[in-house]
Image (tube, rainbow, N blue to C red; front, side, top):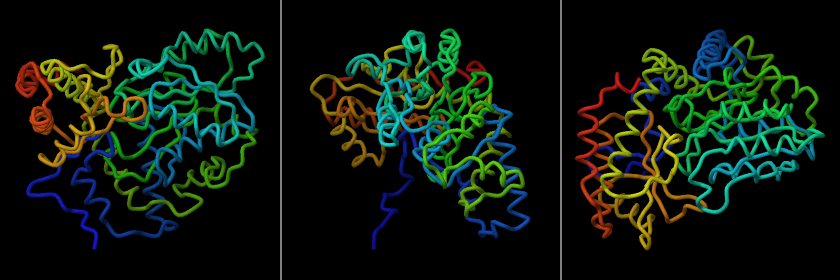
Length: 402
């Protein structure tokens, strides 16, 4: 029999940038008995969730919830708004942007991939000026959508979505704006309505602190209007049936009932704490981890401090050091899971997640495992990152981060 709880004494440190650790409060909610998804109690649950989730996306418009991963929500966003052969402009910021582009190709769309060249291009955020220039060239308005990743989980870069909106407006272009904030929601500042996003894509297993299995499309009026004429095939993902039956708190198919219990608990936790407080503690954690990386004398994957992610930090290894070998030592010796480098960053860096259900001491322990593991791997460090992070957390309060 496969043993899925094989870790030694103490808790395993899951410090990848998602799935993030699930709080006991949410696990208890998920464990409640499953109820009839056509019964009155479920309708009340559905209406409550669909109302509260809008506050996290900062929207007054509908948020559609799927029993799927974030990849499913990507597909839903594309096929509900576009038609075969439509051109879409996508910006390459990392591994997940490239996967989204690949999906667009498979669906019969014509994606155009903008970006800065090479590995270094994955160390920057979305360049809104490049989008504006390209849209101004598209005088026939053949480009139907602009697709960008808000928080690129593979690199630790949080792009300026408001700047992308301004670029589209400055170009006078009618393209829809589709944004992936799968790892950004409830960890990094995100404002669906204020930033003029047409479809926001997200998932459950990051800042919402749930297991994988729920994903979201927050939709604008413009996106809903586009869905009425979009011609890509769709059935399960179709917005129209979901939006209609959601009015009474139900879904047109069997939803993931127990994960919705967990989502309801997660939303309560976030709203009780207050989103401003939630975002501030993520910024503070990120700053503490970056202080440790600086003390080690290592590079951060993101080169632009204005777009440092509050969700994760990519740590670049010195030339000649295999980051995956370092991660292996840290996992085997200290029961600590870190994110791998993906795509162009494979073997160059590892990723420390600092999101969701953790605290200062969680991160101190994580940094201790990283520091000890790097020393065992022969990585030369200038000073103790653990000590630097301890000093940072001791002298920088959460109130200062707000």
